Image 1 (tube, protein in one colour):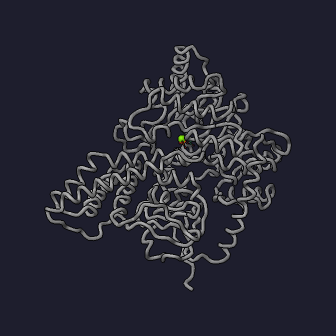
Image 2 (tube, rainbow, N blue to C red):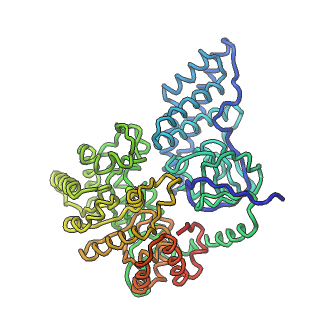
Image 3 (cartoon, helix red, strand yellow):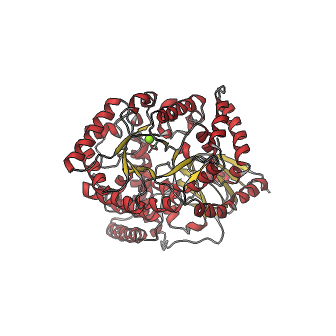
Length: 585
Ligand code: PEP
Ligand code: MG
């Protein structure tokens, strides 16, 4: 038997999975061009219309209301985009023109037009457009599949599989197959914020992408172990890795028990309550948050409402979205973050000037302070939808005190205009200048949150989406931990609550460390809540604080990592090793 082969790509959705390799996709490259005679032009155009209609019917069926999990709403949003592409005059026009003027058959014409779109999107240089090219790949692959007599029905597998996608990963790669058998996806390309990635995340399917020459390394049917936490794919994995993974899998049953156990508040061993809130994007996510025992919602990423829109949603549409969230929450507290548009989250309809450096550009509160119409619509919709429920408003990407003051004054103005009470307002500290000046903000804000995802990238000048500089993007960098510790101390001294809602807070390896630094409010993706609560219940607040004093003299991430492993082992025994999605410290 050939020995293990190890391939490294980039993590799109973390997690682990094992199964046999199943290949899909031919890649976007054109096989061979097929010419037609002029008499066949009409037939090819009619065929094009027929397959477009067939695809629209299929996407519509996929978006039909389903059971209440986070994924169906996403499916509806995503398949809606495909229906728009299928009706897009420029797409239809280019295919018809290629058939009728260049005299190529339908498949050749679709592939030529697809390649043209993909190269234009890729040349745009913006990560957002590059990832959107996955949408057009998806639609074209679907049309071509009908030409090959694919009946479009869901395919089932007899055994667990790892999908090996030879081109860009698209949502159909998941939706066309029996999801329960898909253990992981390995693809030639695809980004973290692509629709395929969003869907895979919702279904907890780990994904690694950007692996070259997949066909040279993997043969159909071979056993594949995907460790997406480490962006690594093991072909023909050695038995030791397989048995360690099997042990972790049994933890899933334990996880179900933890979900039931932790639908209640958690206290440390010495009786300090620690709140564990949920980060959500869509109203449907609130169901999962409730199921997982969230003590409330610490972050609603409201900009996700824009993902399937052709234009900016009116106040009424926004009202309905926020009302759904509030209704599902059953009066638990909810922190609505105002829309964080910009960076890698720019909706297609939004008139964004070209930017060389979008993460440093026109984003979030910077946009809202200039576009008061959008600011007012959102704040009014939230206030009206909240009625008498418990909620607060969080401002993203605040840099200066002046920005906060202007934004707060505007919120007060909207509340006065509506005759409604001004809610508690706080700042999401994710820009270095703001967190370093936290003391000044404290006199005015009602609460603070730390967005470690952005804060780390801005402090270390390391793009959060760039795997090349990932080694610099490290939440346990001693200098970063000192900043966090200082922020926690400042907010405690000022009697203002503080949460951490970046990904760092959801990593179980960091829980004891953060409690030791004094953190009393976590906000994390719903499914990690029961795990965090279980860990917290094993920690003594006072002892963790004492232990964390030992990191003061440490000055490298390696030293902190070593120290943290020892601390976790001492407090939690082998609990962390059993977790199915532990990531590196
Ligand atoms: C963050 O930056 O940590 C954060 C919570 O916001 P987002 O990930 O949406 O940028
Ligand atoms: Mg952020």
